[in-house]
Length: 148
Ligand SMILES: CC(C)(COP(=O)(O)OP(=O)(O)OC[C@H]1O[C@@H](n2cnc3c(N)ncnc32)[C@H](O)[C@@H]1OP(=O)(O)O)[C@@H](O)C(=O)NCCC(=O)NCCS
Image 1 (cartoon, rainbow, N blue to C red):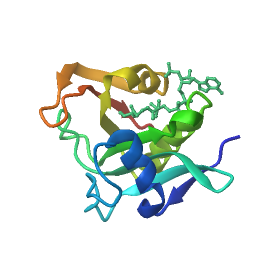
Image 2 (cartoon, helix red, strand yellow):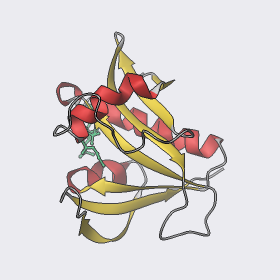
Image 3 (cartoon, rainbow, N blue to C red):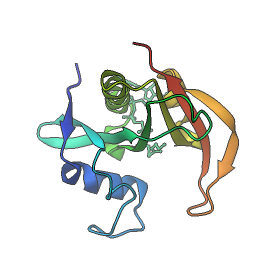
Image 4 (spheres, helix red, strand yellow):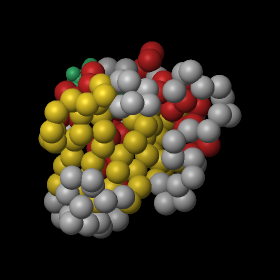
């Protein structure tokens, strides 16, 4: 059983930076730093954060009337810890947090290599692969309805 906890953003920050924004230096700003209402999840093994993501309330761009909606960002597992179910446990916990806090829908922009990972956890695609002008990594919009 993988334990996932709600964590201070500062505790998960270096993992998020090193996996998702390695071109930035420790301490550089990261997207989401300014969010007061984000809930950060962490899978912690022997005191070390090995997988993380955060969720926060934000309307879904392609289903704006489905409120409340929650946006998931910066899903990352340490390279040496992948394929052990840690990311899946963090993603399931994030879905649970959004649901428990009244969310009807969870959405995210997924990096193409991770699409199957999200699909296995119940998210479905919206539209086609697109490439973000900012960092040029192909992404797919994905979402899930959150049952009560
Ligand atoms: C995507 C990512 C977060 C997944 O994290 P993870 O901890 O490896 O996730 P899991 O171990 O739960 O699942 C990963 C794969 O391992 C497999 N797996 C899960 N549990 C397993 C276990 N106990 N033993 C062996 N394999 C397992 C799953 O089938 C899954 O395969 P899939 O990717 O084809 O769906 C991780 O690969 C990562 O950080 N990638 C780089 C950053 C990134 O792309 N983030 C997503 C941004 S949208």
